[in-house]
Image (cartoon, helix red, strand yellow):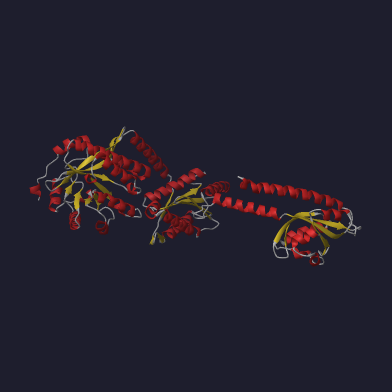
Length: 608
């Protein structure tokens, strides 16, 4: 506390001291309104010499004719060196020619001049003095010499400089992002408000863009926070390469940046923002490997898309959301209908949260039938929402809810807890089941929370990991999240959980994934199975997938089986498991014993 108060107290003391010096000088100046006597015994001279002042006397040409001891001490010159020299010997170069021109104009007209001057010592160092220059008038009323009375204010100036530097540092902290050096959210908000006000008065337009780094969280999770920081610093450098008087850029926080472009048409704005995304796409080293990073950008225009800061920002945010929803790595311009889409999604998110709170969500189970006799039936857990007004809903009606990370995580955790509760019920009913398949998302692998809870439930219920299957889509194997997903899958697989690749053939999974990852089973998407009887191409694809899977030691499940003809064809192709409405739709856990008992039986000998 003492250190923090020291600077203001010191400055206050110096101000008081300077004030007393100034009062003394004013008294001296009043004495000098009458002609100066030629001898040094004048009352004024004695007063000045007896004070703490630094005193010098010059003629009208600026030649020094007298200095006191204080003058010599502070300047480093001897009186002999100073007397006869021009006062310019003290010039430090700090002040401009205009500064001295104004000063000389005042004193040449017989006016007293007061101000602060930086002088140069003999050794070249600088010192500051509070200076009063008093013109001496001859009996004829003309200026014939000057007396300069100075007080050393170097300590005060140092303090002022320190305070100024401290203020500048605090301003930087308040307005700049320390990681990227770009203006921060606070400065952005001030600038945006200013632009809204200015363009409202001038009836002008400007563009606001919000930029998000795609898969930034995956970079942090996979390579660590240091790699994430380096990524943001590199993006900051690339953004600054576009900086000019028309483009203001800032980091809003996390992986989000904002850009305000003035004086540009819509076409010019689109072109510039596309160039920025292309610059970010250029490979940059993450960890130890050059990687291509993409970003998404949403644009709103003032005043068309929002006449105030809040609505304009919301419009840009909606455009950004659309860019990410359409696959990322793109620029999207705000469209009015996005507001209605946002309202609908917001209402859906609230409904889902309420549904979870009121127990409206449940799991239904669809049997997975083995074609080989003697094997137990497995089940796939499927999410259902028993909506109080719209009845039983499948994910086709609330799938947009999974776009929100928090809701996706909450639904995933609900699924996990319910599967174990239902598995206990089925065990008590002595249902002859092999495995229960649960559908996972990238969110389940972004931290260890989901997997840790899975293994906790295994221990709490006594139901081993080998009683479960983890189903994932091909999209989970792409992007920077891939490493986290692979680590999670290996952890599950090593514990005995079967790993299945869902909807195979509809995404971008490669044979490399099948060879490298611990995948036990492939699920052929229903879109191929539906036309297997009528389409030679679909038959060839399904047959090829089954043959490749078997050659790699993996089993195959065909989804969407609805006819006996499909069953015959899949059996001829040596498919391992079948799933679809031919056997049973998904049903509640309490209905399973009856459903399994009444399910159509396959003639294994006839099929094979």
